[in-house]
Length: 253
Ligand SMILES: Nc1ncnc2c1ncn2[C@@H]1O[C@H](COP(=O)(O)OP(=O)(O)OP(=O)(O)O)[C@@H](O)[C@H]1O
Ligand SMILES: [Mg+2]
Image (cartoon, rainbow, N blue to C red; front, side, top):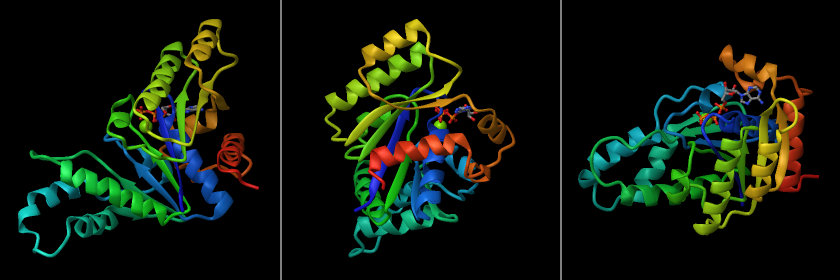
């Protein structure tokens, strides 16, 4: 059975960067294949991974919806969506990526969405590891995109506003009974210690801190140059920190 790690947090705190580092550390440790899912409509995970997504699942879904009445009888919707999932997949070296995109066009996506969720679950169970990069905010939680994942990592930088948002996500996961396994906070992009205000908000949030990633000029430069994380050398400190985090979450060794 595959293990799934989902990432959540306020806008711009480093969710996609951490998702990419998790994929990269898993790939280097296990050789893959890792399934990466970009569930943010404003998708950027492909760039971080150095892959090019030709199409999004949202676009393919829209076609399914438009043609749903024309499906030959006897072809179940699930079979059709499974086919589209494979069409939307980009294959890299030890990493396969699916970009969800956004649902396009008018109409109700309920049937397609619930079938899609089941198909994605089935797909990810065929991979030893899946990493799910979510959009900023809380919406994806109520849509239950991260339901039942083995680990939910909430990311925040040292800003009290982002830490408060992390606390809200933590609370909502309980309220919605999303049934996630491990849950904790990764503090990212830190420049020195947290201030007193941030420390107090962190305490109120009641989330265990799983790892701390400092501000990293190399990560920043890669991003500015649009270079993938696979360019990082094996001994890059951020990869070491994320590998340690994985060892703790997934009980490696
Ligand atoms: N530890 C770090 N050190 C330096 N720069 C970082 C670090 N983490 C993230 N960044 C930079 O911060 C910016 C935002 O990061 P990223 O895109 O990962 O955030 P996000 O939470 O996914 O944003 P969004 O909410 O828009 O999806 C990027 O330019 C990224 O390179
Ligand atoms: Mg992002």
